[in-house]
Length: 238
Image (cartoon, rainbow, N blue to C red):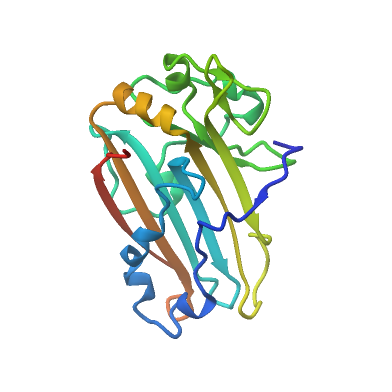
C-alpha cells in the first residue's frame, strides 16, 4: 500500500454539503443518520456491483461533524451490533494484518463476511486502513489473485471478478477551523455480474447490512456525541 495512490472520489459517492452537517443549523442532524441509507452504493455506473463500502466525511468547522457510512454483506447468522460507535464496531477489523500479506490471510471460517478489513497500527507509510474481498471465499470460488489492480481476483480466463477501490477527496486528517471544507476518504469492494451470480450461490442466506454513524464535538458537554442508525435486509443483488 505504500506505493498505492488513491483514486479521486467516484461520482457515485455523494458527499454531504457543509450546511447539512453538524449541530448548526440542524440540531436534529445527529439523530437522523437513517436519512442517508440511500447514499450507500449498490451498483456503480459501469454496472459493477458493490460488495462493501466504508466512507468517511469530515466537515472542518470547530465542532468537526463527521459522517461514516458502512455497507457489508455477510451470512444472516452473524451477530449484528445496533449501537455502533465506529466502522470497526460494525465490521470485523484486524489491527495487525498487512496489505502485503493479503493473499495469505484467511479469516476464521466462523466469520462469513464477503469482505475483510484491517487498520494496521504498525504501518508508517501509506494507508493504515484497507478493505478487500475475503480471500477464503475467493479461493473457494476458484479465482486467482491478480498482480494488477488493487486486491483484484480474476477467473481462469483472466476476467476481473472482484477488486477494491481506494479513494480520497482532500486530506481527512487536518485541524479546524476550515470554513465550508469537507474532506473524505473511503473504500469500495466491487464485483462483476458473473462474480455476483456465483457468490449468491456460495453464500445462501446472506444479508446486506448498512450503518451510518454521525458525530460532532459538543461544546456544552465537552465531549464527542456519537449516534448511529443500522438497517439489515436480505441480499438480493440480481
